[in-house]
Length: 370
Image (cartoon, rainbow, N blue to C red; front, side, top):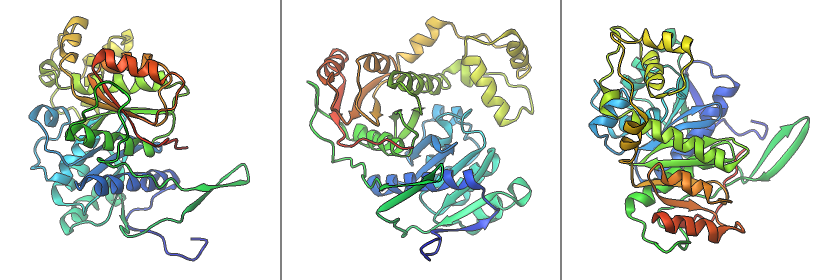
């Protein structure tokens, strides 16, 4: 590095590129902070310098495991975290960069090996993990060992158009016991909601702004990243959360995939099954994924299933300016919200939360990331 210090990582296998390193270094910070905050193994699935998913090692329900295509492996806590992170938005995670807070064990390596992934960063790799992953991509799979004790400088710089910009690094850490006062009539935050809000806020810290994040059961289920309007962030995150939940519908889990269909093709087929806007050419290609044409879910069947999604936490990287964000979030089972506060319409937004029985607390931090 320019100041003579050693790099905080080393290549165990493969040769990462520029975007690989951007993904790896942002993802590593995310999982390291989740590990520190919650004391659980953590994982992230990154694409184009934003997380497609992130999670901590909470055991998976059978439906979540099946919907995440994580069967066939006895899951360790770290493997559970990666299965959840990858399962948040499997279509977006295609070709991801993975980050893991703990030494990569054999179960996690087996999950990574069978996914389309560009690389992984972790504080270490077991012998079994090295053996399995070094065979991936014809021996080119990138594996980076991160120094868990490395602390970056207080100031960070960036060059844009030949101009060097400098600012203080964002060293704010989400804390399950650090939420501020409730902005709503309801104020109680169960421990599960505190955990999920930490997951969501830490994810937002490394997501391109504007951004919103929905989380439940220790994992992200929807990220709305890089939108100019916050309501568009909320719609995007909530729509992804809805698809995550609909993947667990019995009809989705029972889809008659054509024998030999690859995992990415199955992900695309599930996505097509849940969409209502397939063009005729898309419809024809989609039908080729199945042994027989499945009966699509009706809008009423989808809504009935979505009404079962509950206890979801949502975080915002800046204040929520209008109640439309709350109206949309409530449709996806959001019951707990963390946001910095500070909008001139805070009372209007809080009133919307009160209408739905949502608890909203102040996070105390703006998390814009660019």
